[in-house]
Amino acid sequence: MIGSLCAGLFAVQVFAQGAHKHHDDDDKPTNLKVLPKDISEDKLDDIMKNFSKSLGVRCNYCHVAHDVPGREHPKMDFASDDKPEKQIARDMMKMSMAINSDYLAKMGDHKMEEIRCVTCHGGRAKPIVSVDSIGHNPPPMPRFTPPPPPQPDNH
Image 1: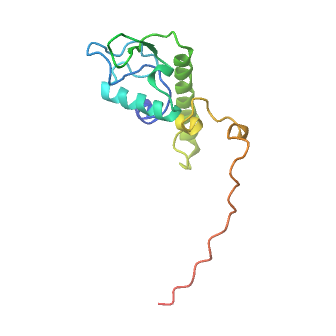
Image 2 (image 1 turned 45 degrees about the vertical axis):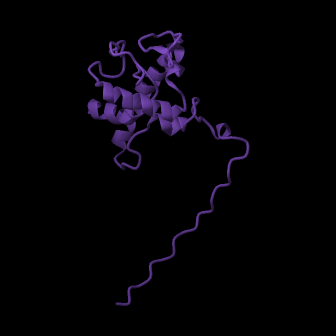
Image 3 (image 1 turned 90 degrees about the vertical axis):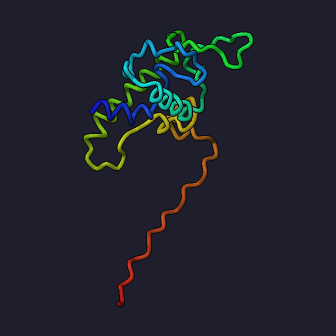
C-alpha cells in the first residue's frame, strides 16, 4: 500500500531529494529520507517536476545551487540539507502520506482519493491556509441552480 501511496502521493509534494535534467552523469540520488532509496531516475524526475509545478518554484527553492562560470545552468547540490525548505518538504510529504493513508483511505466514499501538494499550494510556494490567503476580492460564489426535474419518456 505504501508503494502505491508513494507513486500517487509523490506525484504529490515538495522536494526531499531532487533530480534535474541538467545534472551530471555521475550524480546518483543520495540522502533520500522520504522517497524510496531505489527510486528510478525517471520516477524521481517526474516527482520533482510535479513538485515544481505544484508550488510554482524551481529546483533551487529546496536545493542548493552553485553558479559555475561557463555553465548555462547552476551545479545543483541535491544531497545538501542546507536549505530549510528541503526539510519542510520532507515533513509535508510525510504529513500528506499520513492524511492519505490514515484518514482519506478509511473514509470509504472515495470522493477525495488523496491530497497532493497542489491541493493546498495551487501553484504557489506558500499554501493557501485560509480564505484570507485567496485575496481581498475573491470572485463571488456562483449561485446554485438545481437541475430541472427529469422529464417522463413518452416513447
